[in-house]
Image 1 (cartoon, rainbow, N blue to C red):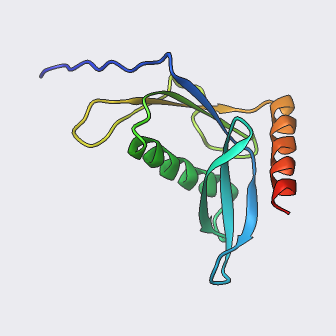
Image 2 (image 1 turned 120 degrees about the horizontal axis):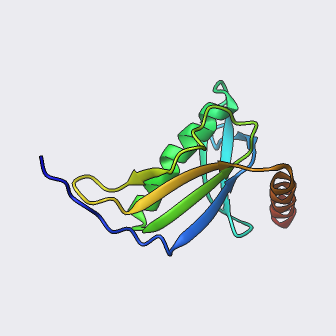
Length: 135
């Protein structure tokens, strides 16, 4: 058995926030849940899931799709996703997950963390300002 090592530049660190799930009406009129990923006060990614899923499952789907998005963008480094504590069932105690493209060395360390009360309030203010700008 051979052991391979990979170098991941952890000096590059980005913080993302998933704070709430919002109801949304799709283009064809179907009710869905929208999960928004925020970075630096801006919505940088979103995904839709069935309205029948729990919020935690919607967030899980969003994280899965978002990590694929980061890989297709060739992002390298550490990605920290801060979650609202209302989304239960995520491993926020570990060192993170190594992510890489198929048959390629890992290029991302994905770390999940729960937000504290102050961070949740800050994220809510960002979301409010985003929705005001669209109207």
